[in-house]
Length: 512
View (tube, rainbow, N blue to C red):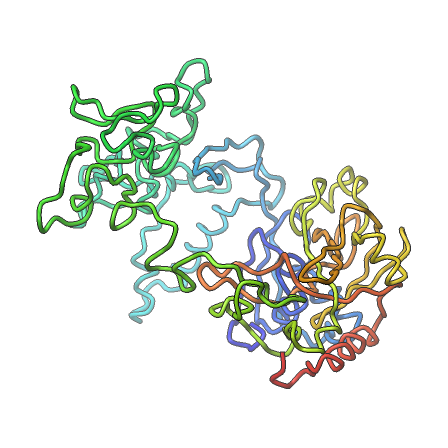
């Protein structure tokens, strides 16, 4: 977006203007769009950046010069729509709608479905080959109510998949590669088995086993523990009778237990594959890790990771220290974006790194939720945590002249923010490699909108990503901290630029 290579942006349920690494660059990038669609419960910072972003005050942006056309559309909350959600234990659960959304508020499902219909109407009659995927897409969900809400259960059933007879598939093992079956996502195949919404099951604990297989539905195949064949020894017997979970039943000639066995049901523990066997038939009966090509668990990854095969310690992109294990300081395959607006601090061995001598980390507070769009607009939560603050140790406060309850300015090569000072023993100096390093703790819930406002901690971060799944590195970086409030207007970017110059990171150069 910052390079003008992305023309439009649909933003549903996120708030990069304060909630993503290097939020300042995110805001500058959105100012380069032709159009931006924001759907949320309230007017978040990503919807209002064009007239009240910090860069408007500093003079880096001017509302009259921002060509981005912003569409802010009201969204339905989680209690105003039905549908499924999956938690980190792989449990798919169904949520019923408690009440209808007010006025023009609509669910994400409603929006995407009717947007798809509108696009198809615009393309109707097109002979351009690039339009065929949209026009040929199955997009015929049943609707209900005065607003024609598409059926969330119909979408779940489509994700589950169906067979040649049109009935919902019961298990992923029924999927075929010959085109006779259809499935939206194989790991969810079975969540609508028997034409029943398995995710909506809520059988009480007293009416089922302790594994609770009839509470929601766990992907895949409603297994509550993956690789549960490993709960039995190579001969298929429980390692512990008291903790028996899945085992081989010799009399029945199949795997059984409290959970759905994560193993071919009739593959004996003493099975040995014949020569030329492929896929799951190539794994022995005592090799439980069926998603691995060799059926074995491992402490290393022979393929698939860009920085494998063994786990290794790397320092963050910005760190006061060299890697204590070996000469490679940071992950050599990390994704870096060294450019104007995203300069990185000098490495630890560079004397210029002293310009940013302290370590900071971002974290959550109990009273707020992520970037604050669902909590800073709530009076009770805002009263409990009303102001952006930073946590520092008594030692750092004494070293930098910081006063408890006063103001501090935290500076990186990307931005500078201000926060109230909380002097506490919770954040302690660390003794590392023979010297002391101080930490600054920053909650990341604030922004310019809501009942309580404050500077965004994510403005300070750079964009640097994990090479495999592209997770932003947002929990460790370096900074400077000084007493008092940050400058206002053009003096703010000027101060940040002065820091960069001292560190040899002038904008427009290749440094950093």
